[in-house]
Image: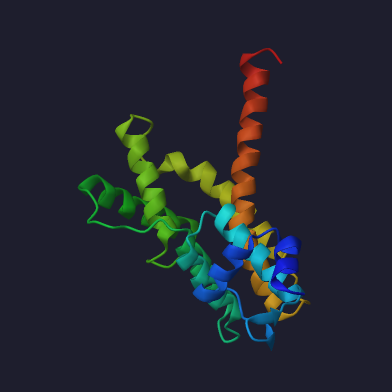
Length: 209
């Protein structure tokens, strides 16, 4: 298909497709003439994947490029791939943490150790959890890391269920894409489901519904 058809099929504008081609996140088409190329279903799928990572995951184009490079790297183990996806999702520390954040980071480390989880010391989620714990403490909502214990238990069960859905019989590319998309999309889906559940329970408990 020509670029106009690729735009129609993928829902991505021609100008954006050309931008992605220049940025290297979308592979070139098969050249048929000067300034003309043919594209296939793989290009349309890659465009949809890019848009999901950006629109649902909130990733920058640079982060998307890192994730796609990891997907395309046949030498990269699945566990490392998930690390790339988590790093792309962030957050990333830009300054030295305040003393209470440092204390919270230590508490988070103790929680992870207590749970027996195998988590990298550089995992961005460590910092994100510490920041959340600090916010709770500053507002007077609990003092210790034990406030996170029930959430940790549910998160551990959910993550285990998610990874059992990886299609081990599929080809590597399908599996690695499943891991990345699952990490990004199901995180957004879980946040939405939690809000829906909160509204339901609020209606039952406080509105007599």
